[in-house]
Amino acid sequence: MQMPTEAPGVIRESSRIFITHEDVAVLLGCGKSKAYEIIHNVNELAKKKGNCPFPSGKANKYLFSDIFNIPIEEVDKIISKG
Image (cartoon, rainbow, N blue to C red; front, side, top):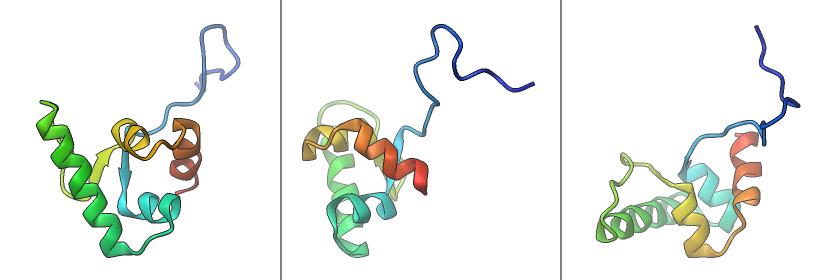
């Protein structure tokens, strides 16, 4: 049974809560190694804030969005294409 996407209370389809190096590379126009470095830095910041970091190669999309001042809707567009 498929859930309706237009039902009352449904805001949008859910997407994953993390970004990968591929997402970062597209959003920031950088290479693979720089994208991995950025993910590492986002996870380090999460640790400093007392949050649990994501496994290697993934980072919290909301923290990434906040750090780079990219609207979460734009991040979600890239994630949904992947």
